[in-house]
Length: 266
Image (cartoon, rainbow, N blue to C red; front, side, top):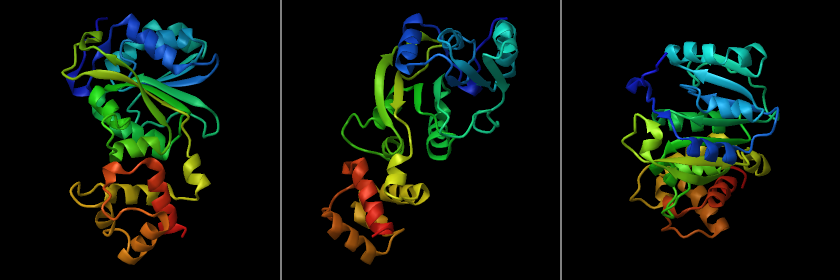
């Protein structure tokens, strides 16, 4: 069976052994560990994941790919090393035990659901202890704030883990080649420890962060007046010693936690 990538599903099948090796190296998989793979497609990444000794849960939305994978990995499915699920990873119930049971996410994901995947598995869970993803290079650079400017996306990821760009990936590493540049993004040491340590509610934290970035031209304190009383903000600014002219893009992660702590726990 020859799988033809579906544009509607954002399919760009990986074809590079070199990139595969970089992904597997970055994933640091331990034998017997559970790995969630999103959109396995032709199974080119599934094979080295299985060879690394992982127990793989692969979720595939495309019924053609699902039937194809069911055939080529029949032995691994029979012996329980591979669990193949037909469905949308954003909706399908997943056989993942709640934390603290560790698992990793390693995947060549459809780029159009990058934000939704990050939100689901970082903010809501079940939360992996690390993720290694092929994503659009521009998105990866925004997440690590390569230009020195933070964003909702970068703060949302850094609040739970440490992102880094492992390598740039050429367009020719995919079939068909995407119109954008790609990169391998690793997010390590994922947890909600900063929230629990500071007794900060994640929902309130992200309400503040999203309000803070609502109007790029405004100073942060003015943006936050839409969700926090001005008097409370003045107290927080005095307590932390923040400049009233600071903008959201210049605020590092721990300053956001400090603001939320002063607002909600002060």
